[in-house]
Length: 98
Image (spheres, rainbow, N blue to C red):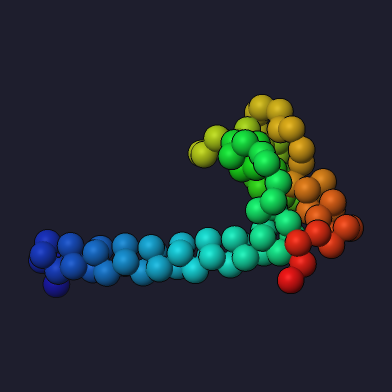
């Protein structure tokens, strides 16, 4: 038997709430790690920081993608600093550890 549309809307709303909660948890976790690495003290454009994070994500996925700093883009533009360099630099000097 098929579900009525009202029931489907309720299920979609419930799933959207679950997604929002999961994204919030992930953002808080990543934010804490970034602050411990000292990224909160670095003056950097948001797009450049996002590009570095995209490079880092690609590294851990095993892909060699170049980040663009724009949401929803794949390979392409140049990034100022790769995520690997940011992570290595933060880990090497231990900046911002609590």
